Length: 230
Length: 230
DNA sequence: CAGAAATTTGACCAGTTGGAAAAAATGTTA
DNA sequence: TAACATTTTTTCCAACTGGTCAAATTTCTG
Figure 1 (tube, chains in turn brown, yellow, green, cyan):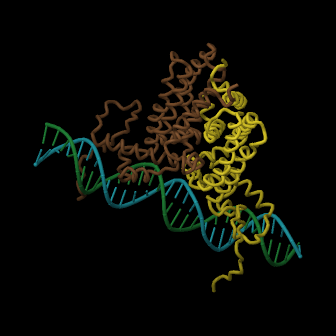
Figure 2 (tube, rainbow over the protein chains, first blue to last red):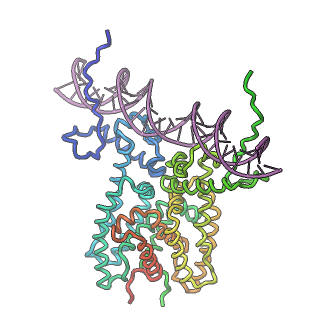
Figure 3 (cartoon, rainbow over the protein chains, first blue to last red):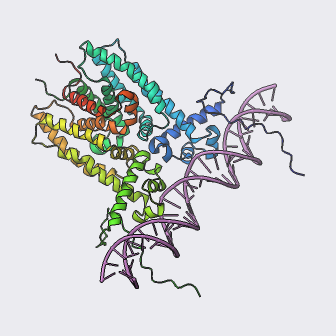
């Protein structure tokens, strides 16, 4: 006589918070679920930002989160689910400073504070920056839609504001899109190419000071350029 | 009686051209060796620049080069050998424009032409740029030495030149290291973040024109900044 | 052309990877 | 605390990975 198997309902895996449409009234998150998911996302950010999607392994993430691989997979069914949630979460943060740029303010201070905010993000959230850089560098297969949709829309909107400022003579005439690219590039450089920056600056200037220096430099550059005063 | 094995000399694998010290008088390259190695490096550049070191597979590279995996491994013993050779080769090219910056020239034109050259490299060798970006982004495990050695030395030298120009009043005073970073960042952005740039610029401006626009913009930015003429 | 050298192929292997399944352990709640 | 739901562990697997090896094939050279 075979051992009697009793009912055994669906294993009720908790699904990631990303929750696509068809989720109905899923049961609310338990305490443990919230804790563990945060733990996993935190660990995954470390690993993904350093190795990219393909380069990262579930094992690494699990170990870094202090749990077993199957246990991790209980919270996120697939490696990609973790990754997607990280990307979505970071895009929001990443774009906040740009959203914040206000057409009512004075152009120069507005741009200056945008640069400053982006630079602070490079300092405070370098892993997020690198995660995104890795993704875009590898062709952004998982976020092209977002880039062509939300991101483009936002940039279009802000580009109009900048153009308006230029037409009022409050800003030197220049292409607003390339201006935004230049701000992105220069500020994120300190997060994405951190190793290189440190290597070139050497021992003496490797500390936190480089962000303050960068802020000063970029402010001057974007305001006056390199031409000496007449 | 076992089948008689006849001599079978060393399989004489050709070694990669990187040739560390102990190579003695290796026999010269055959025609096929040169052709096939170039073919492999070309294919590997495609794959590595898109997926990074860990993300790339020998199979992919072999297929992309139109040969079998063991055949590829006949020319390069290890995956890392291909990668290293690519990195070494590209670093040279990558640094050429900076080496070219001359203390005898006029500062502003000299810097302007440096920017232009770097931008052209982003346009003409985007894969090399991405290969390097991938490496640095992931902590540059295979090139930190070079960064702290050759690269730092070169930048130190050029930074001195720039400082000299500033002291002569030919350039606005600013940190030369951060200036160099800013040039790197803004120019490489068009290669490394190509997908993003295209997505934001949209259909209409996705063509080659963006490099010309970028050149114009960056020239203005580095020369005058954003402040409108008084 | 014969023999030697160089090149290519096919079979194979051990380690790693993402992921599934079921049982065991732990928590939660009536 | 009993019944149930949630969480964790153990075991396992098939696909993929980097890399080896010997044999078969092709190319070169005298």
